[in-house]
Length: 371
Image (cartoon, rainbow, N blue to C red; front, top):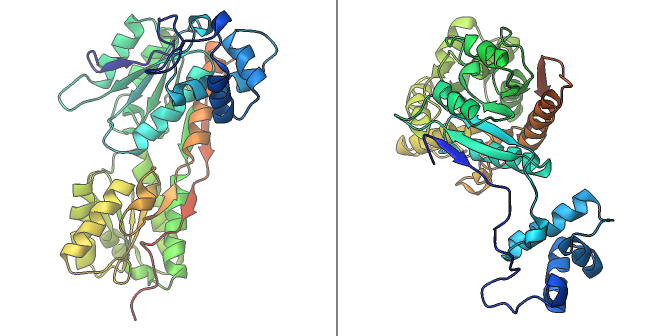
């Protein structure tokens, strides 16, 4: 990491050897011995002949199949032969807020995989506390001659931030795409989940279980963020449709931080407001709500149901497994990269927001209210 910028080199190791610790040397012609071919073929689920063609750099292999063989090499711990080294098509910056929330590494992994599949080298930039700002990271990327930038939950999502920074970036001829947070003053492709629909789905799930809509709370992040505003809009509309008055709805919405501690703090107020269910703006917040419930002597889900948002990889293994609204990470990340590459290729896509539908995933943290 240099000034908050981490390069992810897609090129294989410089060594000409095709080896693994303790493995036999390659057979004549640079291809591995039969046993290794079998291992790689089994891992990639292709024939040994296909593996041999890929390792020897021969034509006649589909790009997707070639990637499967290369991935099998990586998984099994082999170094790629020098002949397979690819020349990078260019650098793409990926600017994300932090890595402690599992949803951000999840997005980063998919974005990097898609970029690598297109021959580009991703450069990961993370905003650390007290470290480089988003503007400083962007300056560093531009100085390094990146071909484009992907912004994930950046300042574009903050309604109090100046959108002029993105206008200036476009003026420098650097294509970019923005994920999570729409701003009509920025001329670029946006990719977002339907946050309003996510909140509605969570409320509908709890009311279908029998929870009184007057006793369903919402724990979300700071009010200045676009995804937060949209979740509040969806939550408010869902409760209003069920006859909850505006004054009560305001009591049921708590703005806090997108952290465990933020969820814990919001839970105290919502439990005090006699809530039997809490919808959260992130999975991390939801885990904070679960912790707070237990400290108040409440059993989850029997006495307090909790719904998260994101569905990052480990959430299914929490105690209890978390009911959550899943962001379509793979589809969103792929769409963002595709839009950016079109911009880089001189074929601008529509400068609008592409909205993806989330999915409610029901697990063990929600249940009918006791009694």
